[in-house]
Length: 129
Picture 1 (spheres, rainbow, N blue to C red):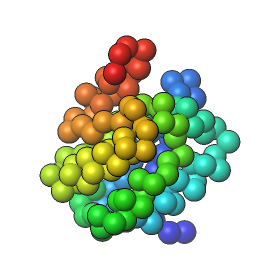
Picture 2 (cartoon, rainbow, N blue to C red):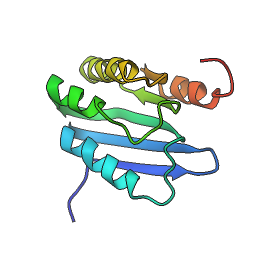
Picture 3 (cartoon, rainbow, N blue to C red):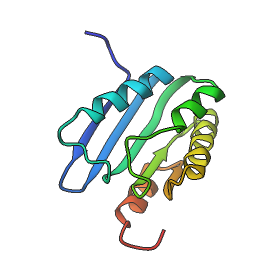
Picture 4 (cartoon, one colour):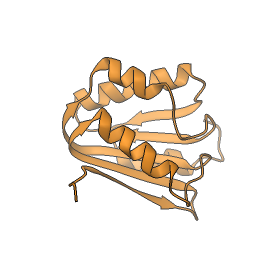
């Protein structure tokens, strides 16, 4: 079995998908996650998502791949999606992704440095964005 540097958990009660990646992250890893979640019976595209990439040590994704990844999403444009990164490089790529998804109509996507801030924003979904 391949050692995949990512995982996810679906919390149906809180309508939340928690995604994590660590080590070296590639565009293929992101595409693999999408395939897994789309085929998961517990997945609902209206759920919120927390993406924790604070343990990513290497990013092997080009700007063109970020654009390609931003073309589509398994999540609804109404879903809240919080992306958390520690390093400036990963944070910058997530900001690029956030901007491109926003241009595609995604209203509630934000990048954070702190996981607690991200969770607070996700859980405040009944309040104004």
